[in-house]
Length: 380
Image (cartoon, rainbow, N blue to C red; front, side, top):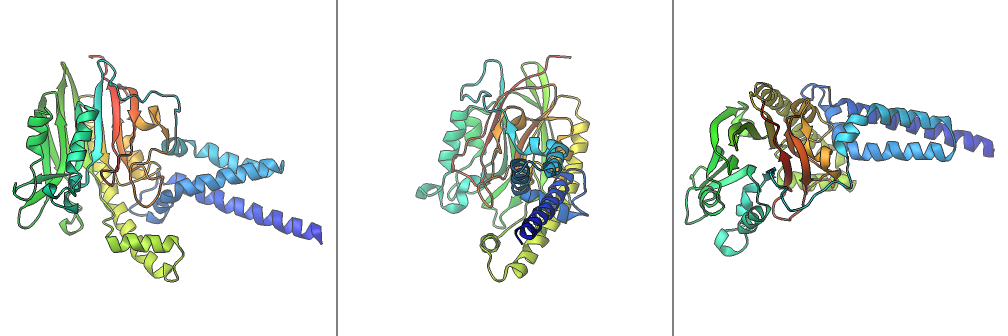
């Protein structure tokens, strides 16, 4: 009888290992599979961290029993090394000083969530706007890329931000693209690039999706003259899931195993499916423009997608993800849903040298900033 139970237990773990391995490899394949068609495979990417943990657990389990079955999870890890390396950065001893290296270009990427102005009026003491602005001043970036950048059209209700960056912080050169405006025109918000160096050319592209789903936002670029060297800086805000507060509550209830999990999950899955389709199209548009750049390019943005996704892989191409080059850990940039979500990126032409990267977690926006110090490529 004991041998029967041992045999049954072993079969159970063999089947479990096969299932976990299959799901892990499917999640890895999301890099290459169009999410607009196969959204359910892309959805596995959201759980990549947990699948990676499970496959490592299976590897350790079989090694501890000195079983040849350890080869299955080991092979899966080897096959999935590129997505693993995109998910987790392996540079624990890389420099991440607040001091800017001499001669470097400091780039800041941050979705500032409309400077938290919707939480309260700026003069009430509730808004975090001034804290965000002071934090940016301390970081002292040379180039800033922001999403959900709010600009006031009524100074009695909201302070103006573009004049503050230009006149108080010293960013004389900027390009702002408005994507959303409140019907009464009190405020608007979009994406922006600010630079301490002269901007020689600007460009704005529109994604062209339905306005009702906020799928018609922009991507922009600026050609910047950095001490006689031209670079092109892109930024964009790719399609969001557009979760409401009620849907965030549904997600929490799903995680807690609420009785109505299935009915609540259907609504959530539909939003994922819709967003994947839009982001695929948006990634293709950005990649096309990146490939046409006559100058070394930097792309910063809130991609609203994880590092083992088709969108990440498509936009990145042969560019460097600054976090995987000089960071350590998972590099979380979004404060909700999961402690492993990295959805904000700085990617640079392979001719740039990445000197150091920081990913601090100030509780000022629902996103965390990414700061990279770069060395410009030598003149051609």
